[in-house]
Image (cartoon, rainbow, N blue to C red; front, side, top):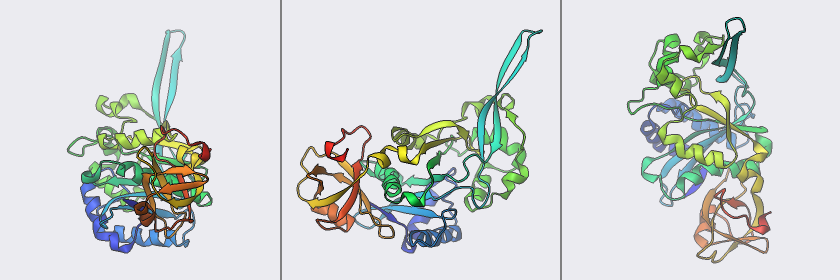
Length: 345
């Protein structure tokens, strides 16, 4: 498997992935025209023709047989062209000494606090390929890209995780809050934001703080909770240094997590090495490996070992990266739990 930039030939596969994703993945709408526009813009981004405010680095996961089975993306910056909304979960305290009453009430504040940050988005892997190293490769490949081209991104990276919804696609948070203001199904609001129509959020969402005690218990229970299918992705990002700091999605209540770019484990620990082709060894741990190219970016995960300033991989791995011995690569252990190699420190 390799991660590479999207291209126009991927459109049919992307549409099938979008249709299989269901509700909640707002940045991958099952809309042919919108997907075509996004792919065209991603091609301009990788060609260096987009400003950071508009940059959309859309990647695909491709098998050795050429089948596209997953996508992930990096947005250069959010909120610089149009407002980017989140709820901040705060606390309001009401107290009366004369009545001996002290009430602490969680509160939702609508705001644009994340403006200007880079964003991890659009992560989706086909259900038939959620095994082995595929999920980690698809998600973490973006970190090596961040490490190689830090000037293209912000000082902080955020990820808005898909919030909880049931098997029928019903979001308890939306039913308890959003529906009262938008008068539409969650899937409809989800679709509108996915195709870029976000003006209705500012037009209809209340600007004043909202006390969560007015929400149904089912809605309160899913604040900051992820969709079951998103739990593995959340765990991986937490292992890389991301944390939930009390911001949630305004539609489904999913958590927004964040990390300083330089403090992301795979960014911080990655190193530039010379590629060597040989036998990594049976006990060689998997490494995330980037060919250090922009438009021709190729990233894979494979067993490797560091020796005398080189990264030793097998011939198949070098072929996937479209490199030969002596070329430069950027690499980092795939797992945050893998023991650090002294030559990489």
